[in-house]
Each structure stands twice: as C-alpha cells, then as structure tokens.
Length: 382
Image (tube, rainbow, N blue to C red; front, side, top):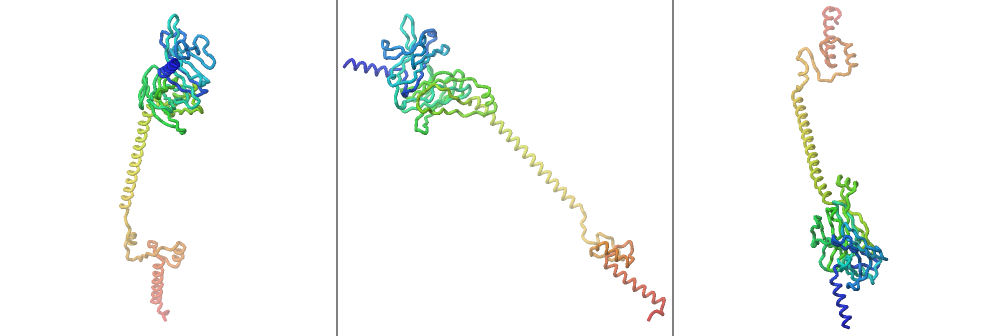
C-alpha cells in the first residue's frame, strides 16, 4: 500500500513538474520542438517515454531509424532544434516524454519534459494548425482555442513572452485578443505584424498550465507580392478555417502581405490624395472666377452700347421739317398699290406721299384746272 502511494505521489510530482503540458484529441497529431546547445550538434538525439531514467524507453532516435511506426524525428543543426512528430494518438499514449541528447561516456542530457494528454473529447487547449507561414513585412494570425482558465501568454521558445494585450518579440509587434466564434469556442487570437526573416521559430501559446507549440515560417516576398505593395493593394490577414476536429496537423497556410511597409505606403498615399484634391479645387475656383469676370464685362459692354444709341421719339425726328409736305403716320402700303396711285397723279419726285395725301392733291389740281378753263373760255360756263 505504501509502495502504491509512493508511486502515485511520484506520478503526480512528475505530472506537475513536466515542462510543458499538451492536450491532443484521440486520433490527432502533435509535434514537439527540442532545442539543444551548440556543443551537441553532432550528438545523437532521441525521444523517450517514461518517468525516470530507468524506465524512459526509446521511442525514436536521430541515428537509426529516424521513424518508428507513427513517430518520427528530424534534426535541424542550423537552428539547433530537433523535432518529434507523433501521429494517430490513442489514450494509452498519454504519458511523460523527454527530449534527450546522448552523451558517449557520460550521462545523457535531458533537455525538456512534456506531459501529453490524449482525450476522446475536445482538448482543453488546441490550435487549428501547428505550422503557419507568412511573408517578410506581413503578418500572421494564430487562434488558440481553450476551455481551461489561467494566465494567457504568447512565448518564443527559449525567449520572452507577451501577456496582456500587446507587446513585442524581437522587434515584432504582437497583439493578444480574447474572442469567441459562432460555435461559442473561446479563443486567444494572436497577431504578429511586421514579420522579419529572423522571426522564423517555434512559439508557445499558453493558457494556465497548458501549452501548445506553433511553428511560424517567414519567407521572402515574391515578385507578385512586391508589385502588389507598389500599387498599395494590401490584403487583410487570412483567417485560418477551423478544422472539423482539433488535430493540430502541420499544415501550411497562406497569410497576408500586409505589414509595416504596406502601412507606410498607405500613410504616404493619403497626403498625395489630399494634394490632388486641393489642386483640383483650386483650379475649379480659378475657372469659376474667370467665367464670372468675363460675364460681368460682357454685360457692362452691352449696357454701354445701349446707352450710346440715339432714341427716336417721333416721326418728326426722322424727317426734316417741311411745311409744304403733309406726312402721315400711316404705314406705307405695298408697292403694287403705290404704282396704281402714281398713274393717276404725278407727285413730286422729291416727296414721298401717302395714299391719303395723293388723293387730296389730285382733287385740288382738278378743281384748279376746271377754274382756269372757265376763266379762259367764259362761253363754256353755264
């Protein structure tokens, strides 16, 4: 009984003292990063399962074979990180695991401990994808879904952490925001902006005692992305689609090319737009003023011309005074009527008669001719 109690307490001790606690759904996959010292580049690394040295059994090694069943291991000597990937996990895979560097002729070096919990239900902490990619100068967004409680942090492996709402990691802006989706899943949304090539690394999403490793790869911009930035057509961050089951398989996803450089282009573009607007308004004002001045000058010229023209008030102003001529204000008849009237009378060529004036003159002349004839021929009088 005492032995069983001791083993139980030892299990609890190792469970609580394990460096990182990771939760994965049954049938899912998980990758664990293990960093090591520069002096151990050429050493064999391995992944073992168990509580103590005497019970920690090999799972997979970097010498041979590099894969065993559903487990595999890879070593990046440039980054000095070896990565272990476990797939097709079952509840019996729940255990303490260790990253170890083998030392010939001496004790092996234990780098890191993990406690893996495989659950048939939804894990307490998981991400859609463990592998996320972005472009230099852009941004990436990671959503860590959680159901447990505790402090929330975003940490770089072997480096600093960001907690609260915002901060920086190696000069890169990091924002943290608590959100929820349509399925009422609570999430810690992490956004890293202004990415640099040196931001390629492993990061940890931490909520309480649980953690989930996420690898971010930053690549250089393509010619198309550079051309897109030159035309100031930056894109919004691409939201990663949640998977049907929280299995955290390494999947490469596209991310935005929007970042510090793209934002600067927008800042410079805004003053240019304002200048163009001001120039256009100025030209419109000048053209409008010119039209108004020209219109006023035209009106003034027209008024002056009207004032300088003589005003005819009556028919007497049109013709010189002559007592021997009788004028009429009656409008002259048509030319055909004038020709008929001129045949019966011979008016003076220097005078223009109206039809009424011609009749009066003809009668006077006929009476005068009759009187003269009577005086000369008295015998003709009655």
